[in-house]
Image (cartoon, rainbow, N blue to C red; front, side):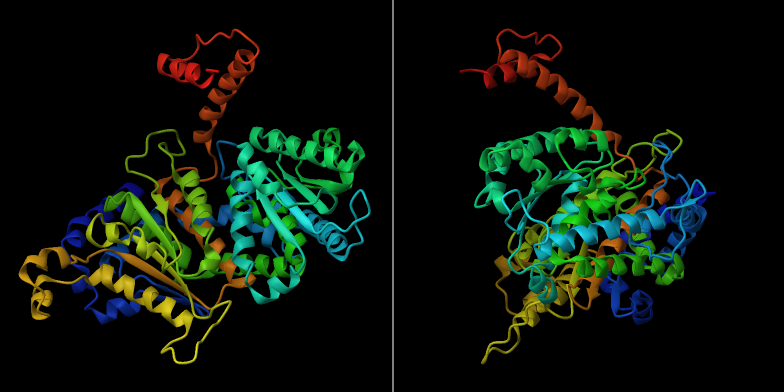
Length: 547
């Protein structure tokens, strides 16, 4: 039973808490066993608060919790999202054309590729100038309207490829912007400097009912009509990623320019679908995006086939659960030492926190442990000058360092001892050791540090981290990295026996917001009934409505 395996893992906590990482890392055989490779990609987790016995018990927990069986079910199209009655098949979105993944007896891969081919054809026409706007000008600027999973992942990939030489060359003369927040300030900023004649709008909403997205879409539609002088411009300037064809047609969108996806694609896993592929193909061209898909598929294969002790997503998921549920750490710092990954952490925040911020198990009973962590982070070395002080001498926060052997933009100045990238990576290698090993009072005394400063300059160390080292940020390795974190997220959920693929926690706020919206609409016209609100909310609403 998994309960016994959980008890065995929890039984390791006291020993590991009492053992400093200095001691653990003195065992070279242990360190070697925690250096895992997947081709040129490396995961080094020897700075985690685990020994061989702990890892053995964690692997047994994975076995008893049925992680392998649940993984096989996910890749086989079984409806593992039980609360919504759906499969979980983002892996199908990056499967090769000749793969077979069945849902209800039907292979979904041909349909996936039908949409991919349609997006390639459309993006090729736009990029070549064959498809033109209402006034006959090429469509060189794209505004992508979506929120949450319809935005964060796509923006992450867009930003990561901006300075990749091949992608940057393919994007020459083109612009891609995003509009997510319903705040009208975001609309103003998104439209700033755009010419309606050369702007193509992509509206991303599966049901075409997402409140924030549809209000933004209507606002931008009104801008287009005003600028171009006719409602007929809509068919030439707005396309959609949606399954709601009647609604997109009513909006004025040509049905040939609506690119679908499926209910087995969760929003936070959807940048592999039309949600991300269309906008990214318009910016960088489909061949670049296809490399991204191939990278994701390569990680799928690794996750499916690698033995437990070599399986990166499994190991990272186990360590996340160990840190959160057993050692009691509530945070996790994701620290990419690469500016191209500037929007990676916001995407991982949604990916993990929306997936695993759950309080009940699959059967509806309460989870007996804490689940999910609070994710935050910044690209190095910016984070070092922001929150690392807390990590070194304040709270214990597990960290995940991500580095790359090569830069997208190598710079080496004459007379400098190292290249700019080596300067950056010097910190990538130094910080995990500083966190793990710290600096003792005796070491400070030996260095002649004044007695009154000894306590202030002492670093306790014993702060756990892991390090990921990849070759370079290109579409292929970006796909591998994102798929790794997706599978890491799923592993945690399977260990906790929660549903990582629904998100009921976001619904209540939406329902209450509708009530407030109705009230505000009435209040702006005159008297309105505020009786359904609690008194503090009534008071705030009254203040907000003051003239």
